[in-house]
Amino acid sequence: MKLGEKIKMLRKQRNLSQEVLAEGLGVSFQTVSKWENEYTLPDVSLIPALASFFGVSIDDLFDFNLFEKEKQVKAICNEAYLYRCSDPEKSEQILRDGLRRFPGNDVILNNLLYTMDPGTRADEMIAICKALIESTKDDEVKYDACRILASCYHETGQTALVGPTLEKIPEIYFTKLELAASLLDGEDSYKAAQKQKNISAETLVDMLLVIARRLKEKGESEKAAVQLDIARKVIDAFQEDFLEEKLFHETIYEYMDEKRAEIEKQMKE
Image (cartoon, rainbow, N blue to C red; front, side, top):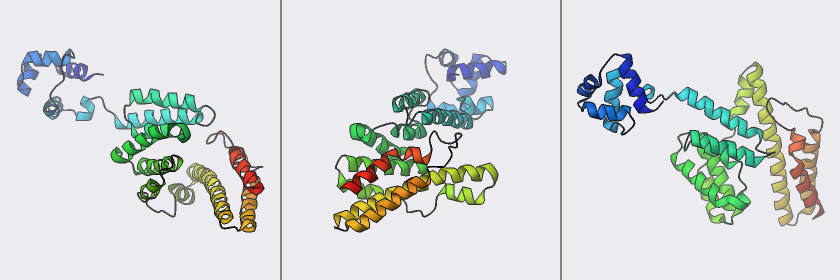
């Protein structure tokens, strides 16, 4: 509901004339009429007085329900996540549509970054990351934007900016998912453990690959081969794992196709 419609509805609910409302706010009844017909909007300084006059909160005056908004935003992001890997263009379109409903929403913008390819859209991603870091009040969004920004700088050869960007991220030796898995019960613990399992598996493989590359740079090929072999065994260990369809669209083993290809490539080099 638009603000003018809301004012008109509240006024009529209380059986008040435009003149009475105008007198109570110190404006003309023509001004009230213009509000209700959407010709003009109340001055921002009058918003608290309007809410007080009708005995409602400012949020109620604007038909703003934070919980409902968060629920709708979450639903948009969850739908987009279903297509993030299989159809990133569709995922992006869902999020773009969401931004038309909730302009500038930091959670939707954060999810939008995951649908973009830094190899071709790094400049756009960098702009979004900078805006999120500057404006969001959500630490999770802020630090994820820092991580993605650092990756974009690396992708575009702006290596001098990578370190300072990473310095904005605090060093934490545990995750919320780990704590939830350990301290919660039942389904909440199970879901957290499943999510953390996937994250930990991918991170372990990534770190083994990084160590192998650095060992090769130092001329220690045998040690590098050991790290690559461990990475391959980690992936193979998940070959028999089942798919938790409520949480993921593919297993860790299926998700690691590109990692397996990189391992094979490094072993041949």
